[in-house]
Length: 303
Ligand code: BDR
Ligand code: CA
Image (cartoon, rainbow, N blue to C red; front, side, top):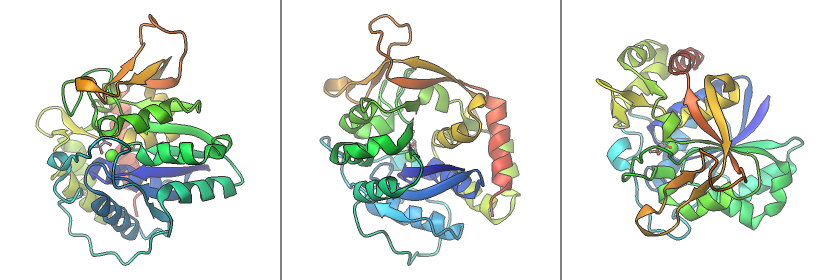
């Protein structure tokens, strides 16, 4: 079983990624941590609790940073609704959080683990950057960092920057330059990781969990059901852990612009023109049909 920690900002596509990860028997979700992203930290943390309650999981949950390292915080409630998971009436949660900040709780768990842990980030990289800069000793115990973020096509916040990186570009750059194995899924790939109308209608018929996700999907503005489909950006990271052959990768050099109008834009040396150093494994392709079929199969496993 692969041991993972998921750092998340639920978020509708986050909720779907968490649903799959928490219910797949080949993954051991050691802990969830929350960060400010799609909506503020209070909402993302409450949303993470609701998903854990819904699936009756006792996965430890730690609350992370409410603000990016340097930039002013901006949310993405225009895509995910005011609370981040609008569309389904979850009961209030009485779940307890771990007592320390996510970076501290991640460090404790990573250092205590017998095996290496994979860190999956599906929100801004603030918590991950704090973890690696406060506790560099964890690096020996991290197998890989799998990131949803960035774009080497167009952006989804402005013409060039993707949301997770735009919110905290400094944190993203710190993580990408950590020297750890980085696998990164940007919009080039994740905007093709779509579910269409038939897929979500099928998901709706799959019992309580399917109905819950269907309700969220019908309130999600990431994509368009009538045309391109709904973009399941965050699911790509979990799909990669279980079915890497669905994607194509290129090792490359990637850097985050930190200032000026391009702040939060990722630039990759895909044509290998300006540097020989390769610091990431970038997803450059996806088999869309296999992805869709896999997501629907995983949704059938939800309890
Ligand atoms: C990313 O931003 C968020 O809105 C999604 O949850 C995803 O993590 C896509 O740019
Ligand atoms: Ca997310």
